[in-house]
Image (cartoon, rainbow, N blue to C red; front, side):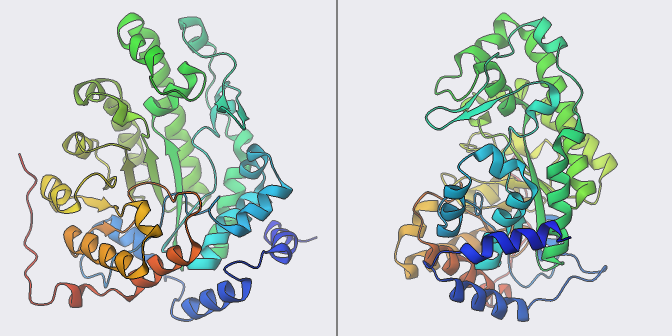
Length: 401
């Protein structure tokens, strides 16, 4: 009987499209893999080491948010055969194949599981659908004390495909990159659960802060417990680093985020640091320019900066005692390649020669040229801190009070 990995390879690689040709993909990965060796027990992947703040790394590691997905011709061909997003993100063979597509094409330093922040909702008693026109749809939004009481502890057996996929991926990557898992922060998950799906105004959940604060606290507490369990499950299945997406935390005024999002993130971080102390945690918030100092206080290892924050200013505000991730504007991938090269150099120099994970300031945009993504990673692999910072003294920056 074929293994899930072999099955995925047999089913999908034979149908790979010709754009950014399969031959170029394979030759690129073969050339890169020749220079990489599986990490020994004493030397973990570059991304994990950077997230932990190790000294003496040769260059920043790099990966991209949404690096697996709709901009890739290979993914588009697969999606035509499997049009349901729920199927693509809840079937082990499909998850493994989609996750590995950018790994085979570009060999990033981080390989992030293809999934969704809402994937665990059915496991706590919140069913949802995904509409092509509306996105996620929750038929019975949770807005009452009774509905919160009906939520159940997370049933990890219902998420078996996540654990299976991570175990296969860890074996496939074989130490040549870090395997990343991810979750949504309680506030961000709650926006979908309360609003019933996507929203531009967040009026229901924001009003609950004042009209039904106990109901909202109960919901957020339940989500914090479930998300903590889910992170531990991902780590035990092979994830080496976890990113927490508080995607809609930036929709809150800073003092409101301090009250309604931060405590629940801190609760998660505190538990993970006790039970999985070896696993770095990254926190990303879209629109986080007004929250950086508050984000640092959550206890995570790395703060992801969106592209609206100047990296030099972000590093100055946070200091060198914590890692930073980002933050090239995704639109630069539509620019001439020399322009993209210059921007990568600018961001890396601004972040400094320690505790930096190069990434975009948001996810890869639709229709992004695959050649530009390849160039992003090629440039990153060519960087050397000793050359970039030759003749300069990188002093320890203290966070601005």
